Amino acid sequence: MKYNSVHIVKTADGSHTVKIADIDEHYHSVNGALSESLHVFINNGFYYVNKNRFNILEIGFGTGLNAMLTFMEAEKSDRIAEYTALELYPVDKEIFCKLNYAEILNVDSNKYFLPLHTCEWNKSIELSKNFTFKKINIDLNKYTDDKLFDVIYFDAFAPDKQSELWSERIFEKMFSILNNGGILVTYSSKGEVKRSMRSVGFTVKRLQGAAGKHHMIRAEKINNPKLSI
Ligand SMILES: C[S@@+](CC[C@H](N)C(=O)[O-])C[C@H]1O[C@@H](n2cnc3c(N)ncnc32)[C@H](O)[C@@H]1O
Image (cartoon, rainbow, N blue to C red):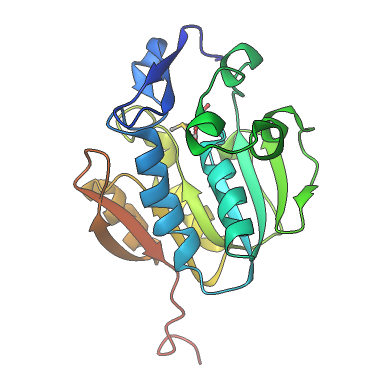
């Protein structure tokens, strides 16, 4: 099902988000899209990884805000990020070309933003020496990969809108494609989400949230030496 009624909305910090009226859902917190992305995915995900070269998987590419911020931070910190983003229903050109992220971050859209949307699907592209990007037009339910990741940005629609993507089955898959010591970060801290993550082996930590949300989750794949013989 492609979304029908799609609008750009300005959030409390001035950055845009997208609203899907069909399912009454926004791509980010209306209390601040940029603040939320920076807090959940960049500060508690990207910067938690203690490696100079690492693989990131994003569930739900959407507007490209998380990918853009990661591209910028990879350059700023001079680390090498290989970024894979999954998206089932790409945002149309008439929407993405109006999003104000490059403007409010005061960077060149032609370098950090537009290529993420206009580049070819299903192909790995080196956008700079610090950032290689591949977006895959696929349903998360059908996604398989031999690649292992160090961090997963789990940014699906909210559990009450898309419960099937917050299930044990999906978190088991996420756990299996993480390297040992890898993490999954997400903006939701619902009890059932934490329980599902724990049941598949994640060590779950509730952290302070941002942009109107009290908490967020960082779930870690910790190799338990007691379990390995
Ligand atoms: C909360 S929004 C993502 C926001 C995005 N990370 C951003 O920075 O704009 C959720 C995204 O997941 C996508 N999506 C929904 N169902 C999906 C599925 N089954 N597989 C892959 N992507 C899906 C939606 O189309 C939407 O772009």
